[in-house]
Image (cartoon, rainbow, N blue to C red):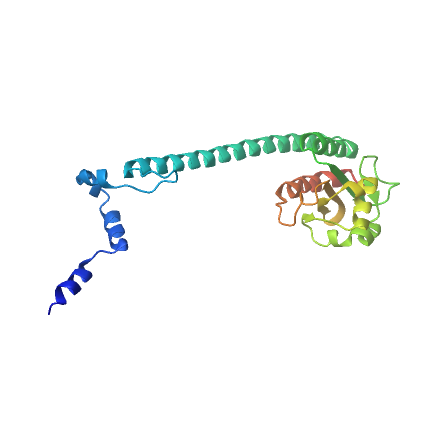
Length: 232
């Protein structure tokens, strides 16, 4: 019988989870019991104890700084997207305004070099060099292209990553030794008529996981413009 009060006392003790649950359900508890705040303290990194209110202010200040950092990052991304949109708009307009194949290819190379700061650009067109209008694009036969870069032509989509020495040499010629990673996209209008490739000195710049939305979009524009200036 003498153990019953002790057992009852143990069973009536609140656990930390119960206290936490109660405070979450009664968030105004300390509003009605302000006298308890004076007796509450929490450990602080610097050593001395601080009041609950001071700790709350510190937590809110940290959250505010985190939110300001996130907002700043979002604004930076928005500004970068605006710049990318402006560059892309200028490029597309320049491509559309091109009067012939040379104009279109010149506009492409100029934009990639100066607006996008792309290290290396290579545009291949498949066909007979004697019949192809003059431009900065390199003209090769489709058969030759399949021998050297066949895997890049199998899927009509952009690809990123690293290439072998033979592929790099075929695409970029003397510049191949300086290229670490590339992004490529076939040009297709009914049949594959070319390939656009860009290179970077950094081996990790163009990765297999990198988005290729921009390159694919430019390829779509070229797919609609270039065939009008190629021999049939």
